[in-house]
Image (cartoon, rainbow, N blue to C red; front, side, top):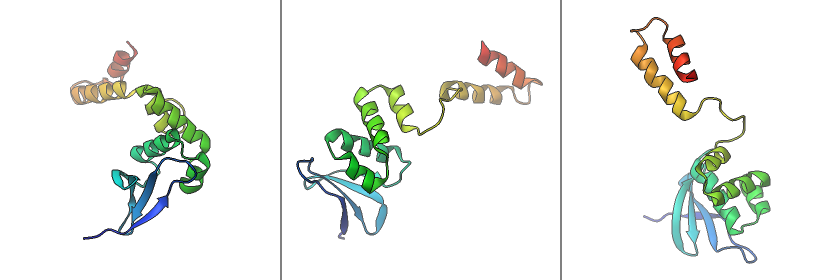
Length: 139
């Protein structure tokens, strides 16, 4: 079985020898090659974390931000933010950079998980479970 790949991004003028291709029968998946070696497959979906991280790695590797913007529609400032977050290695910064626009969440994932667990424990056994959970979270 042969797969026909269509190049999407090819190196120019001193950029790294990274080639992005898509298969005709699988347009929602990008194949990332370094020279002739397949490095990875990532979803070709704008909101997929793997896709965002690929663009950040390409930006960090020296692929022109203008070419990435023209081909994939991500703003240069977004590419820069994603690239800096990956370089930092700070998981909080990476999570914030790749989670999209908007205000910082008031409820952390840990607190949300605690609330769900307490709700399951208290629902049906406690009349004012809402007040109990709020008081526990506030403490």
